[in-house]
Image (cartoon, rainbow, N blue to C red; front, side, top):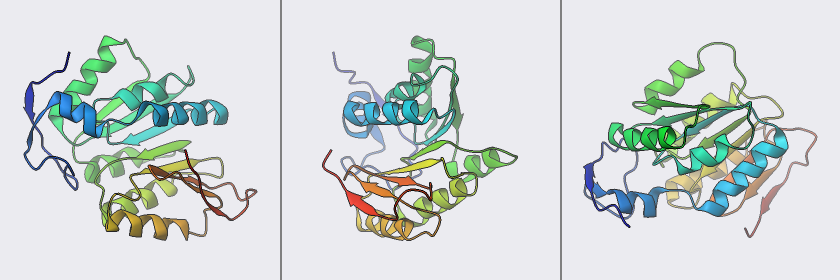
Amino acid sequence: MENNEKIKINDLGAGSRVQNSNRRRISQIAKHSSTPARFSKLLYRLIKKMESKNIIELGTSLGFNTLYMSQANPDLKVFTFEGSDEIASLAQNNFDLLGSKNIKLIKGNIDSTLPNFLLGDKIIDLAYIDANHRYEPTISYFNQILSYSDEKSIIIIDDIHCSKDMNLAWNEIKKHPRISLTLDIFEAGIVFLNQELPKTDLILIY
């Protein structure tokens, strides 16, 4: 049964491409904002294959994608960031319902919470950027994460073709000298930093 309850959204990003109102049905959030299951499964397989243990996700939504990632490796930790308190509460309820112990939800404006989180000595194995789909925030998030990445790290940018801003950000990211292989699967762009991989930009049908 669909959940038609409406909640007020504190949207700190580019806003919904489907709804202009900041009051949205939970069912509509699930339909339009949640990651497709096949893409979540791809992330799961990537994490499992690379044995990633330190993962960050910018943009939790209802937490379905977060839950997929958290199951890939019993030793991993997923740090997921959500700017809307209302949506974060729904996601936390989902995590609690399924008894997930390796997910840490960080609430608040990502422009502030991400720099605070990155303080200290850490390496991010995999980052999934799905927040504030505009040029400047996307480039900022990418560069911050890049500073805490090594050659085994993977960075994934969601919705790279959803707007001119995101197209521009994706094309600039591909040119970064630390990047080797990039995969454009239309829904997202996948960035590899391993310099042993060919310096190539591939477009895949997935």
